[in-house]
Image (cartoon, rainbow, N blue to C red; front, side, top):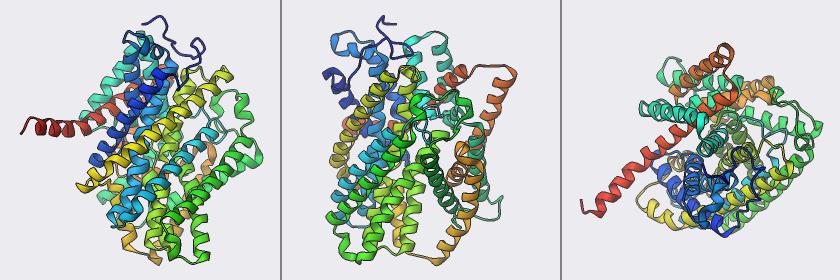
Amino acid sequence: MHPHVSLESAGNSPAISVFRPAIFLVIVALSFLGAIIGIQIIVTLGISANTSIIGAVLAILLSRIPGEIFASFRFIDAQNLAQTAISSATFAAANGLLISIGVPWVLGMHELIWPMLAGASLALVIDGTILYGVFNTRAFPANAPWPAGVATAETLWAGNKGGKRLGLLLVGFALGIGGAAFGIPMASAGIAFIGSIFALLMFAVGLLVRGFSESGLIPYNLYEHYVPHGFMIGAGLVALVQIALIVIRKRRDLNEESGPESEELKQSASRLKNTLLKGAVFYFITALLLTLITQIFTQMSLPMLIGFLLFATAAALVQEMVVGMAAMHSGWFPATAAALISLMIGLLLGFPAPALAVLVGFCTATGPAFADMGFDLKTGFMVRGYGKDPQAEIYGRKQQYFAAMTGFACAMIVVALVYPFYFSQDKIVPASRLYAATIEAGRSTDIAMMLMLWAVPGALLQWIGGARNQIGVLFSTGLMIHYPIAGWTVLAALAVRLVLEKIFAVGSDRISTLAGGLIAGDALSSAATALFPAVKAKFLTLIGH
């Protein structure tokens, strides 16, 4: 280990800035790489890879290269900035931008692509800025699970410190890769080792109920009857009310196991309120700009236009809150499902097709950046010493924000340059096709009734569980995903976790290190699985086969 490496805290390292020339150049290069990886994987598999782990590993490797240009990466804070940038670029390019502009392409509304790219880019920046403002409030506390963030922090610590922690991480890493090779979602197991047991139990139940429905064991196809969508609407609306109550009451015991609250968390109510109000204003302005530059206002009456702007603003806020809460507790963020719900409600409200294409693209751009930045700020919070030095925490968090915005900017450039190449080969993200097909399917009063019917139990479940457990949002998230093996994996991992904690008295630090390895191994395995065919095809093309 290099003598200058800071191990588990930023306290011994100098103030690391994104704008140091060497750090900035590396961050930009990693951001372009992350954006390209994200686009390639999402058009291949329909999902995005967690490149935070890739960024962490690359940053650690850079720290081992001699020479002044890489000297800054011997500090864990600089490594944290590098992984923040690459993951921000990945999710911004793939989940935030490419899906958004794919909808008008599939619908043949090519004139909307550039305006949609501009609007989605603005929404993306607002989304990330809101998370930066609400992180470590009572609604989104830094001591919440944020599983992918924990995994990245464990990777950084183990890579720098070595010893037993590195050995445990490598064991988890090997298990993650091995399980993934057999089709077992080992990231789900890692998440179960870290997150809230009760919330993840409901998430697993949701996954299994959906799986039983699809297999015919339950004689009622939940997805075809819009049960997950209705549950998510009800749970999401109640979750928003619960956030509002935090602002009004200015106090809430979100996590009894988290220990004493920091001063920042105690005084977070006004920051949460101000951030959400400013976010709503900027979302409204962005929606207004989109209606102007796309000229969709010409197809709506004035009352409909006002309704569209208000609905788009509310949908964007609800989307990011629900997606953020699901990600915070489970590591999964149902951004596609949440955007689909907004689209379906827009259909029922009678908005014209071009307006719906703009609406769903706008909503799609909110949520992924919110969730991903939450993971990254959780990593930073951990490696900076869990907020023990408030000044260092605030400074480091701001630098992470700048790193994320740099990643967003690189993602915008990459998407603008490469989308014609992918779209012209009909390489469209499946979610874009789903939204386009939904718009073409039209409106149905039967759908509205089913959504309203199933929203009631979703709302009740979320209310009964309270804001701390988020069981309504987590159960709805499980219902949205057809991945039953993940449900069984989460249940099995929860059982193993209880055995380790209660019988063998294994500490939470060792369990989280093992979990970090599981998630990291699964993430890298998924990325390699998606990229290998593309790299192989390119290589064969180059050598003339």
